[in-house]
Length: 312
Ligand SMILES: C[S@@+](CC[C@H](N)C(=O)[O-])C[C@H]1O[C@@H](n2cnc3c(N)ncnc32)[C@H](O)[C@@H]1O
Image (cartoon, rainbow, N blue to C red):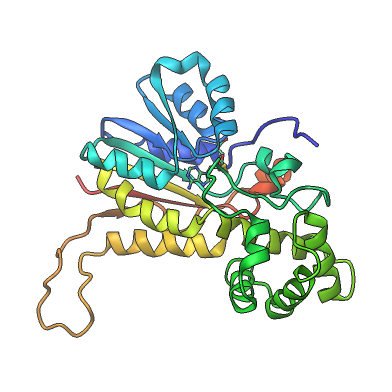
């Protein structure tokens, strides 16, 4: 099944307002350009904005090129992981007016069965790689190779799956006779573990856990955040939209830490750290989509936006 539209940008007005409210100059890096929704809104809102449009998925980048064609003179497209792109931006020194991370997968990636991100089609291959990264193991390869303990930890950590251990045991038992290849095999294992047809939420959290591991999403985020911070021009703004509590926690802690004046360990008689904040939080409270936005776009439900401005 294909979605009627590629992807509806989440919290778009808030992102545009936060990212453009700065005197900083330079480009805005959209690290997860996807279908180009946020990038387009930024280009429309400010005729002076120039964008570096990054995505690791060549299909997403092709769509972004199509959507952003009217503004192509103001956009550079880069096929890369955002941690690599952030490293590249850092090499140029503090050159960015803003940076946007809209994490996770797009609606299109979820809707195209052959990508294997969704549990909706039992025939879908258990792939889940966002980019054409041939060295990265697919979801099937993880299911067929990780030991029981590692599988249980993966489902627990990234899926908050209460039956993680039982599911891991069932997978190890089943793969001894038939290696995992298709989504249906994972759904069958889940059905045995639950002793009934699993709910949509129960299926989604197991698929999500695998996707996060396949794409090393948490590692990419942890690496990219300080690189983007350093690449921001003074008063440049960083916006991050997270869809999972673990990734939101990483963002929240990083932005809080950068906004503190002292990060010395407790109990030190004298402050020996930087002694001043690196910038300020622009979102004292996390920003969530309105009920109206969630109704129009149910996939926005779990979104949490945080923003930070680098010191002058
Ligand atoms: C939620 S979608 C972004 C949608 C976009 N903001 C829009 O308005 O259309 C997330 C996108 O980020 C990309 N992505 C996820 N992790 C990435 C990473 N580590 N490096 C580069 N792109 C990544 C995915 O391929 C996907 O296209």
